[in-house]
Image (cartoon, rainbow, N blue to C red; front, side, top):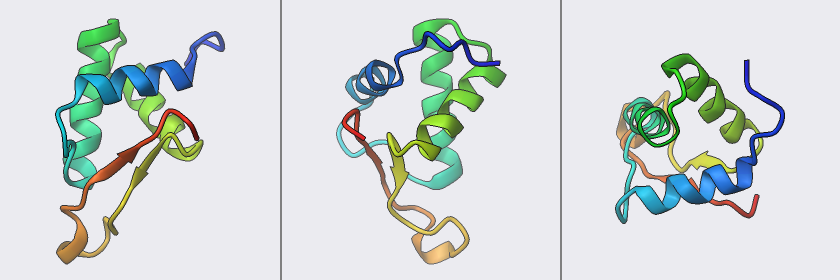
Length: 84
């Protein structure tokens, strides 16, 4: 369960600052990288971090620029925008 007092905008900005330019790449690979960063940076469990990534994606803070169902564009980049 995700606590209601988490500032998703700030969390997105922190995630963006922690990632290098052009990262992450790939749908599942990118989600895993971002999940692991939240675990390391904020001490969330893997499940909590995964739920946060899914929530941030649903709310528009994280947007995959490819199509994860098509192999040719599955290695696209993510757009990470704290201003969703």
